[in-house]
Length: 554
Image 1: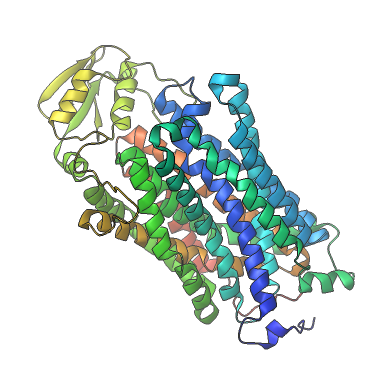
Image 2: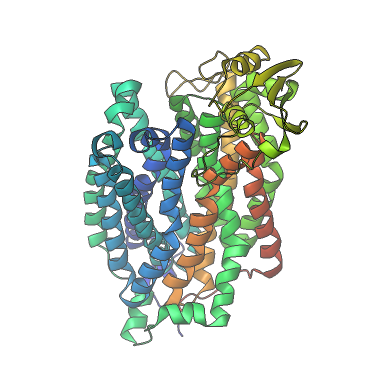
């Protein structure tokens, strides 16, 4: 098939039409990510509002799982909207997705909490999260495909890298709105009712995004294919029942997007969760630290996207996965040392053991938050994990009671309490800090970035963002180039959303559950390390390089 001749294809620069295509696609996608990330950034507060019938630790897990629910349905959104996009067109499909996403977000801002309408509140909340996930499942593939099909040969990595910035820009925008609202009304009012404001103002962004997208024309490559009658009538069958294409879908997932997904969510969401829930950094400071690292690092999406036009998509993505896998644990240890030095010192120098009859000790792995622990051995360990105390389990004699040893101090733990003042006092005396203690990194305003402790944490978070830009900057171009036009939307969307929605979206809850079950605050990092390593190996051996592919072929 001959290449479509457009002004952009003849030009080495970016024309007015191409700039509008990128801006329109990117703005809508920024808005959708803004909507999606509001929930993730406010998971703790939302847990207290909608899961108030449960203990605090369980609320956190439920809140994270409700966040993850939106990720779990993303592959189904990819299938539904991918099929529509390959049959009807790119433009109209991502108009529908943005409307679903925007209205679902606005309704969250109006939704009464559990204290007002009981069990209906979390049920409706999860239903809205599922709608958001379905919409996002159709959004990304449409925007990336649309921009790539407007890009000239040799510039697709650069053009689509602007779409790649949208997830980070959406997160950054959500953090800014949250910080502004928190500062304006205070923490107490924000936790009570002010958290709704960022959800409600999203309706204004929805109006602007829809207006801009209505001005777009259909993708020229798709339109030409449709005019020639070469479009697919059964894109799902062609994409997944045909082994030659299904094999590429599997390779795209395991050899590319799976590792990209876990590196991305570790560098942004798990880093934020680690600061707040494990290192006990206050929410205002943690959000500012992440926001500054994103501000400094976001431009590198475009740097690595453009670089992939020169040296290829594969080496950059796989290098990012491998380097991240090798350095995650040392970087998070350095974050601990700088963000909460007393915790890191206590972690290294204090020996805490839970001594109990092995018959009374169960498995604490609880990523879905539905298990209730009642045995003293289990509640003691869960309490220590929730307090970010490193512990080990030592099995005592059969029938013996539960004891907690903090260095040389031995404390009886006679019943299944949710905590124990004697244990709290002992770990505090051994040097373990609590939230709000002096020494934990704290920012008094957004520009308080020049103190050495603050600058060091931002610098380490910036390195994590660089990993994110390496794996994510070129991924859209690579996925578009792997598949033919007639089934491109469907084929690229599914592996992208399995990799990011399942492997990435489940990362925070699963990693925290690993921490709780092992008593090691760094153990959760083995989740992204393992999957990023698998991608680096599989991608190196099997994944084809795509940068010189002619994407105009049907």
